[in-house]
Every structure is written in C-alpha cells, then in structure tokens.
Image (cartoon, rainbow, N blue to C red; front, side, top):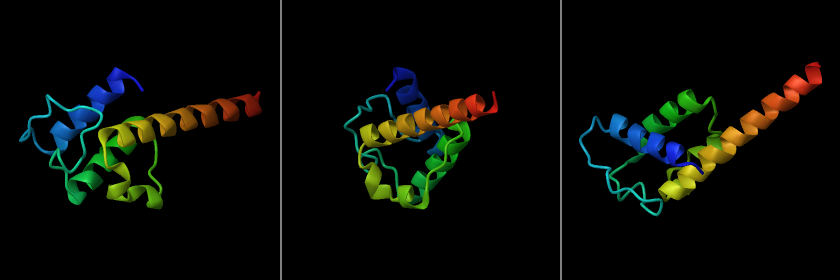
Length: 96
C-alpha cells in the first residue's frame, strides 16, 4: 500500500465533494461515513477509481458497508491493481 495511492484516494474524495470538506487529517482508520461520504458519493468515487486504475468493482464489491474504513478501500484498490497487472503479464506471456 503506497503513500501515493493513499494520496490519490484523498484527492478523489476532495473531487467528489467539490472541495467542500477538509480531508487533511484522514488516516487509514477513518471511516467513509466519518468523512461524510454517503452512498451516492461512494458510487461517484467508485467510477473515478475504476477509470483511474483501470479496475472494475464487481456487483458484490459495490456494498458501501464493505469499505467501512479508508484502509479497506485502499487495500481493495491495491489488490485489484495487482491482479490486473498479473493478468496482463500472463496474457503477454501467452502471446509469446
């Protein structure tokens, strides 16, 4: 889990809330609810995450309660990114 990924997600939170909230004190244990993120904003966040990292949230992943903390969300993104990279590598190796 990189600091860059954490910073990116915080930037996304600022983006989906139009800069109306202060996220300067976000920590990994912060809950999305404590940060003022509702289910509508969560969907907006998911769309931005999917586009930025070329990952896809499966239907069962869209459960807002699953991502009770920033840590859960960051870990999910990190694991999805690693899987995409692994799948791409395997695909390239199969072509060779």
